Amino acid sequence: MSLDEARIDDVVVVKKIAAGHRALRRLASLGINIGDRIRVLHFGPFKGAILVEDLDSGVKVALGRGLAKKIIVEYAQYN
Image 1 (cartoon, rainbow, N blue to C red):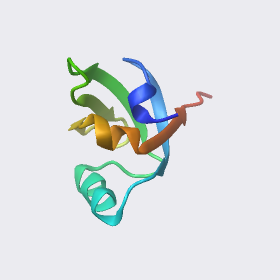
Image 2 (cartoon, rainbow, N blue to C red):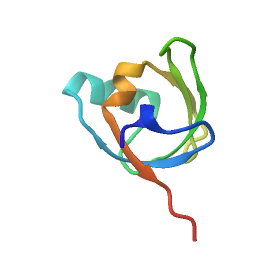
Image 3 (cartoon, rainbow, N blue to C red):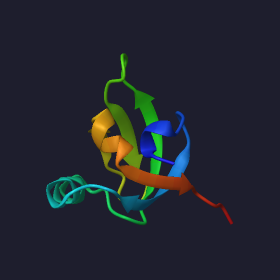
Image 4 (cartoon, rainbow, N blue to C red):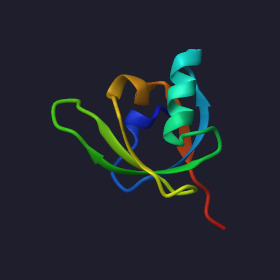
């Protein structure tokens, strides 16, 4: 599923980023990388930005809905 399909408080793992080189660099500069655990904190109104927290780095980032659609995730497994 894509990141924009997750729900608030879901913890997901980034599996793939289906975007171009610029978007990959942008996400890396924000601290979002493949394999990171992400928690969805908030959805902006009217299909606005998605606020997420990278649980591996502690960074909180607002992502546009278009970019979030390109981030392929799956639910994190807890041991």
